[in-house]
Length: 141
Image (tube, rainbow, N blue to C red; front, side, top):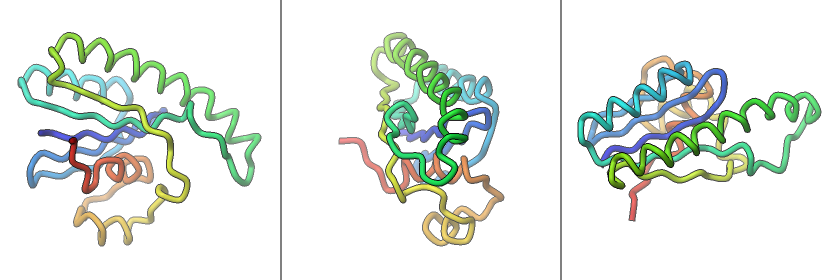
């Protein structure tokens, strides 16, 4: 089973686990979509977890600014949900997904803490770390 975590946005964070292979990086949304399509073409069983900003209810300090920026991320979440629904049908359920409520306090790890928790030592952005943490220690039931 391959696990993918996605933190939508202009800078899309993507986390990847396939056995012992782990990765966290930031890429453009169209490259993230192509990454999923490539997995579909490899006939792998894949589970994708997407942080769904549409379910977020808190915005903290500078909330008015954050709410404005959240509009485009919410649109991106809709795009991801539509895309993954279609890809799920095409893959005959080999690619499954879930849209997750953002967990308050479970994101925005600094690079040092992220490295300690995951063992990933490559350079990562906040978006990549958030995406990877959606799948860290996750097992589909």
